Image (cartoon, rainbow, N blue to C red):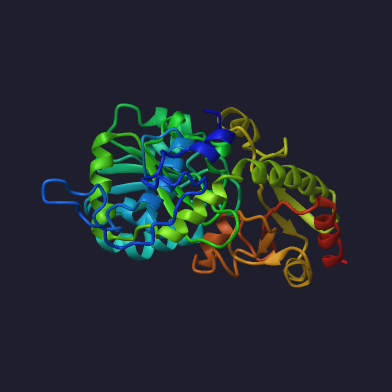
Length: 377
């Protein structure tokens, strides 16, 4: 089944027998057992819910995975996956991560006895040098948030071949429509479903998908026990959003490339970080491991005032922290998504007060260009 078709037909028939095209919303916490000898497949919605199953199966199908787990948010998915590791475990993570992931790892997960090294995970010699006897996982984003740094997933997998080290990939920026890390060797793939999968900024969701039966059993236990599971209504909204994932991302990517080229030529813009530009350092790796470049970019302005003017003056493009919806969204990472990251670390990664992150939507691209142009006048 091709990705465009899987977006629409990626889940099994629900228990509902009405023949309705839309997935029913099973807004039930508890399910009745027909009898002692004939228990229901569904017991309690924290454990299993038919609407959540549809969302989980759709994301798993799109990722080429056997099992999917739906969470109440992307952060809930990451936090639950981290519970797979015993105290004393060492994890190597991409240094340019979403600020929420950095906050989780350095202020909460670390307190549980996990040790982290943050590096450029595309630097394979450095990655190999950081592997220790207690290294249990490599955690990567590709492209990264917000600097769009690309990691070669297959190269990382090859670097840990034969070792008992999990490869975990946050695939939020590209979605399973453009990139499938499991096919490249990832053991677990994570999504903030709030972003491209939902696509309309009206649902909070997170997902983790995988193939390994042993991991599936362990994550099932954690998923049920911790209980940060995806609600029926949000499950429904994610399934509905995924039906248009392909058409939304094709349009947003087309807009992103046009905007990246326009920004690159603007006198107030000093750098554009978009993997679809041939000058991007990760462009060739992206061509090898993904079907597209996505619609996320960052760009650097000539001075902080220009960055602030852009987010204050745009009329169509909204100043908001999220990403991946039909609306174009723009933010300054140092003020929002990465405000909790120490300044010294931010600057080492190129995240300064002139940097703007841009989630390109599906509006008319000329309207977006004119909106940016007037904001920089």
